[in-house]
Image (cartoon, rainbow, N blue to C red; front, side, top):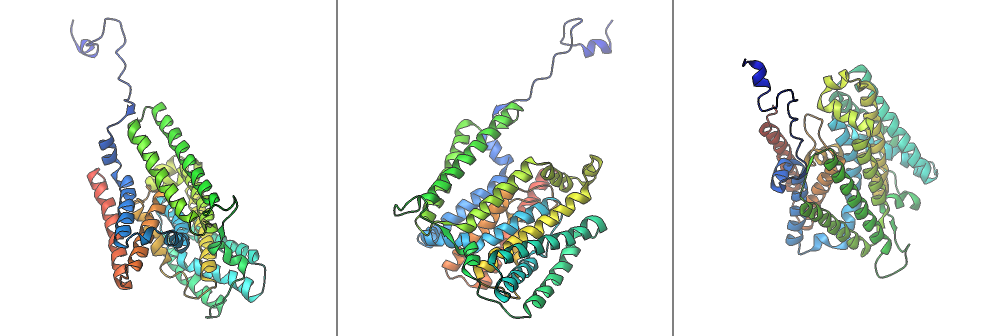
Length: 416
């Protein structure tokens, strides 16, 4: 008798179990399809290379000179520090408009202690970090436990902390800092491995970075294959590592032929590595992505949303304080108007680097590339003598296009 049972068992021997569904396909994927599927993530790297080469051509190589590359690192390091914290805030679905004022206030506190009260430079650094943590806890409390939107809390903070900066400085600038404090943002490590006409230590650090990146990529590829996820072809994989290694070593070579390894670059590298691991491999990082991706689902899965949101803003306060120390060190003083528009630079770096407007998407490395892209554009336009007002227009258009590209990709993927 034929019936539904025959239909269910069609294609199988009598008494045997239905055949298993085919296993997910693993191994090399079509590289062109991979690039298309990940255009939003890979596009920023392509854009960065194109912009660097464009300004190198327009400035006859001046933008890639050892001195100018060193200057870019020193000039935009504090923006990159802010971008690390800002991308975490944005991934969680929030925004922080107060970081520029926090930079100013923490620098002012440090200056009052070190310059005004003749305390050791490290006392000023610790005090600035403590103020930053307290500010982060203050704002985190209102956002996480009272439930006021972060936009409102940090907008109020922008006004509050700017006013406190004027109060701490009594509306006047304080300078100069002693030598030890200045070394934070303007010092270099040079000659640790002997003199060769260039700084071998900088090249050694660059080689370590390349080795670490290669090992990380190989481990990630092995893990993806183990879980039967598609990966790029081996030639594309090797080419990617070689390209990154070439860029890193070229960058290290330029620094080695200038003044050596900037101390601030070591600070920045430690922060990037630490926060990349936190966001990628820790429970806290996964919870941040869960909250930004789907708040209701995160709550139902047991994520303590209030606690996570609180620590997100504590962390942002800490990184704003680090940026405040770096900026005041580079400026060799504290000014009441310091930090103006820094929050916009950090937000732009995060969005240009691939963070989603709606939250749930974004990487620390992407924010770093976004920040560097803005820095290279600004530096290149300065070398070309472009008017300051036109520079602002161009940076605004870059940010608008980056967010428009994010919205376009969501619509193309069926997300409204």
